[in-house]
Image (cartoon, rainbow, N blue to C red):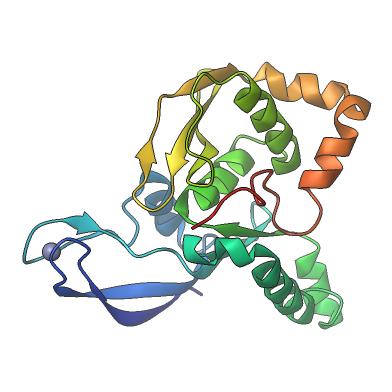
Length: 227
Ligand SMILES: [Zn+2]
């Protein structure tokens, strides 16, 4: 089930209150349209009736897709500096509902998903795209470290995050993205074969891969990013 609640938010440009139906939980199995809207950036986006500025609130919900094995706790970017605390809360919720602390039936369901925690829209979209492309998100993080090392851009530390933003004609498309206003830097295209190269040399990357995939926040930038 997808659950919504109504909420008033002020327009960032003119401060007019705008009413939103904010989602608390998304079932992508039952609402593929919501999954598609997240990917194309239209989800929960509204135009201010007073000044016509388009905006959307930061995400805060649970994204569940049993068909694709995804169970993602999505938090706003403002909570990112306290990522360990939120990861702890998410782990406790998952354990009690679908993990070790739940019923046998629930645990069977829980084993079908990879629980994750993300902060902000670009990180959520990246997880959905990565799974859609059949890429293990832990391998993707290793790939991103390699992309970053070869990137000409050196964005302001803490604000721009390196994200997978697309998958086209055998290329993976990455960009530096600012989560709050979705400013996107130049596209960086990398052949999809980079993923296979990393996976055929597991020992070379084991340390990095283990490091980025410890716990539910699988993101090599988790220590670097601020709000
Ligand atoms: Zn406005």
